[in-house]
Image (cartoon, rainbow, N blue to C red; front, side, top):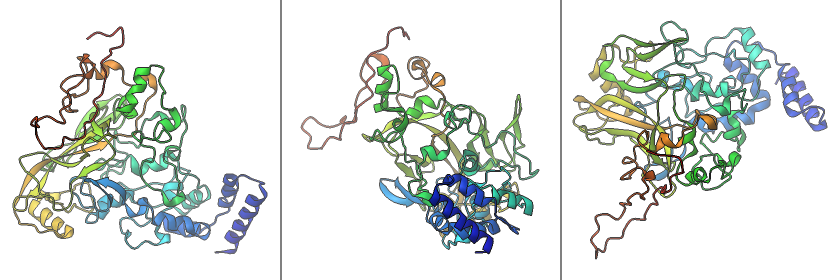
Length: 492
């Protein structure tokens, strides 16, 4: 620790002890005294460590570094996450670091070794830059900054804002925010995520307001305020209460319907999201754009990605658990393979909104499992030349699974929760958006014979098929949504 920094830290302690300044103001004053020279982001981190080593150590143990967390997957609680997940088109992150590590908090990504953590490898600026100067390349790697820019950022670090979090959390794989060819912002894929909770003119919240840092820089990395939690202190009820509506019938919805279902009427409101990735289209299509009043949306690109904006969610039962495709899992090629979907309905499940991403991708015809490809590490083309045998052989070698040399293409789908994009109450779904002839709900998909607003309670089929004197134990019945009373004034 140099003399200037040591003096600053002592001054900070005195200020905090005397109460002369608030902790935030004191910290900002100390930061303004930071001096370089800085030639890289890692140099800024080394300066931060002189006072903030415990915070960096906590980051190394967090999910933002390890990319795993405790989660309910395939019926059991286990450590899982991006590090070993194959729910993104069966692509192995460890085998494709230059494509997949752009959202890591390491200052040397993609070269950083997740399994060999070191405090000086943490990128403090990606979360704490308040100047907006911090920039990334098209693959998310920290860009080159001048000495003056690095000093400016170091002297103005502060609490993370939504803009910091959006750099990674609202990015969509396949649609980088920066065009790899031109280096310019890619049309229609800005990091903006419309949400009333992040609208500076409506409710200037930070992400930490809803994702509390109960362990400081440990950053649990999971939604701690999930709205299907049984406790009133959790989820939307933590701020809005158990009965936020003036109409009792709407308040009754809370028992079986997620708040997000009505209050996120669409996703990709302003920026397109990936709908599908067809590997067979690689190099066989020109870019296709949709004209918009203020620019263009890229609908299909040369890699076979198809995207769109302003999409209606699909609605499924959700209790927070996942069913996920795992390494070496056999598929039925003639059927749709789900890479990710919510667990089967349980008593804790609620109807919630999801986005769907379809894939047409390689599988091994002998072993009948999906092939994890090796992507081209740089450039705009992910599969240059479309040499599928080479892509498959190299990818499976990196995944340490046998490859028979025989491949074909299968269809896949991933169902991902939609948690952001909340709108004000007057823009939320109305009764006839979900019920009646214009309903967006697929009631049969949800397990009902008819729209529950028909006046007849839905048929519960849990015990169907058992003989009258059967020794079989019937399954625990799941209560249907009861909407037998239609408010006056509505007609179908």
